[in-house]
Amino acid sequence: MTTAVQPFNGTYQTDPVHSSFGFGVLYSGTGKFRGTLDDVTATLTAGDDGLALEGAARVESISIREPEMFRAHVLGPEFFDAESHPEVTFKSTSVELSEDGTARVDGELTIAGTTREIAAAGTWAEPVPAAGGGLRAGIEVATVIDRRDFGFDWQMQLPNGGDALAYDVTLEVNLALIQRDE
Image (cartoon, rainbow, N blue to C red):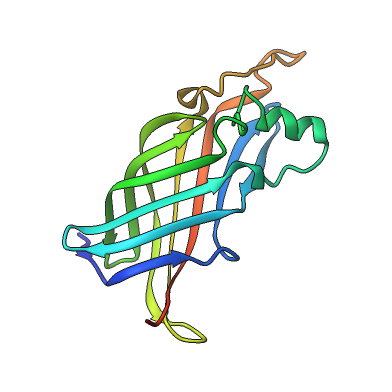
């Protein structure tokens, strides 16, 4: 049995260079398409009620650059609808860290204007002194969602039968967190 721990004090912000929001989905029944939203911000706050994690990722920062038609399709109304919903957001309802280095984060994920409760699991790294001052820590979690729960209903049938794009999507969040010296 693992014991819950809470080694954080104060507020930590993301290190934008080392943080990302990734996704992976099976396409054409042959391989996994992976991408990232690279413009990620998050705040981890330790308070009297425990830990709280909030974050956002800018949809326009998606790693799909070419072909432009594919990028436009993914950012368009059938998927992210970036014009109406420029960010994917998350607000925790529970953050549990265990002494064995495992983490569980529950909360509300909003994609394309639709909010759903999710649970993500992974690992965490405790705060350590950072080069240049302050503290550095990390949380890395993943979960699987059904993209239809967020309005991503687009589908195309393959010539041999089957779906062009799986409905299950793996989400992976890697947060490098920094607490600056005050």
